[in-house]
Amino acid sequence: MNINIKATGIELTAAIKDYVYKKISSVEKYLSNKKDIVSVLVEVGKTTKHHKSGDVFRAEVRITGGGIDLYAVEEADDLYAAIDLVEAEVARELVQGKSRRMKLLRRGQRAIKDLVKDFPWALKRFRK
Image 1 (cartoon, rainbow, N blue to C red):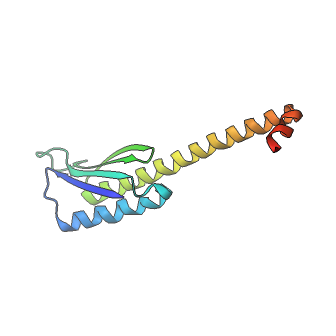
Image 2: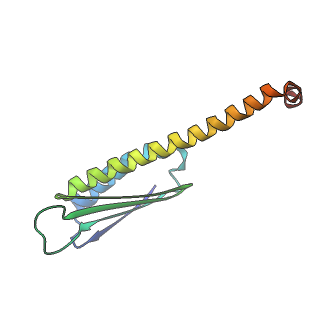
Image 3: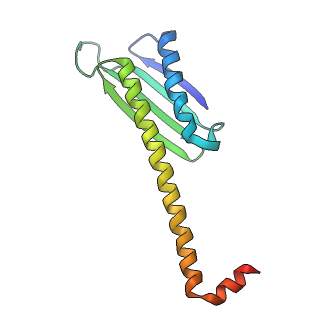
């Protein structure tokens, strides 16, 4: 998994970079066998320069490759909290997408099974 980090409006320190790598690498387990071809772009930073309270920090993640195109954005009053929130959102989206694909696969399998039940002569052809 190729992870690129970009900082906007703040300095990208080693601590922030390590924290982002640690959090984003944890979602790698949801990618199964697509780890080599997936590209992850992470952007962290401040939304505005003049605000001092409220949702000031922003974390964005874009995952592309291997049939996946995912985008998540979260804002929080702390940079590390924004990174935590976006990591949870990405994990949720990846799990939800996997369950959707499995439901579609099972629905297709069920349709074929029902088709074969309706036409018993077709079963003889498929077994050959």
